[in-house]
Image (cartoon, helix red, strand yellow):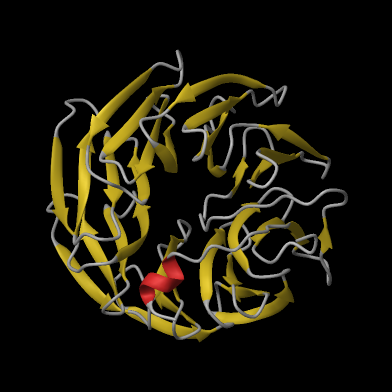
Length: 352
């Protein structure tokens, strides 16, 4: 499978599984099973202020909300939900629905949809600036970025160019937009509204992560098998070798290490704070998502092709445990308080 094929897979069913890290087995949520038809690593998210997990259910035009005790409910949203973001200050969750071309606003306490906000086109990526209380939404096949005021739900559309991923540096007042078909990031200054380009070194960019403490931005280069490290002050980029088709990237804020999943080689490249490769860890087949549990210093990797989750010990940089994770796991959210991992799965609907 080449890089364009892996990016555009369109499976049709998703099951959210809960993995208790201290347990030897995992248990699926009981009852109806959520579903989706797009790969989006923000298809499942955890909100620390409410203790709730949100997962899109595209087939039923709904979002599943899993409470701190594991209780789950389904809430109707706009048609074709793709991704979710949560404001970790206000507890409000935002669900981007592509078919409906809108964002549903969910109250973090009642779980009710309190507003529906129209977007410029078909929304895909979504992120929250918790300091400014604003929500940024990219729109597929559109150059417009939809900006939602979290206090009023009023919308402003800004012409930024197409974006497939959004990372926000709230303290600096910067929004970084990644487009797969480009070789540069677009940077939006939230105070002035100015747009500028940040060279990213190569075409076909995929993963994007921010290390605010180190003043660095990380972007994976699918085509040349490397990770771009961008200095936020100088905007100078250096590259670090990764593996074949590097996709997702995550930062362990506790020690500054960076983890890159290599979809093509079935490995995770571990990069130290000095921007040098520490080690390469063999995981499962086609790793496509990565998340960090800072408290336990564990790194969770979803191996999409072999239906497993690899747990890497951050101290030894070795796989501590490999667990079954349902059919084609592709998105991960971690609740560090309860030590649970939530995995979104892709697969074929048995009823179809």
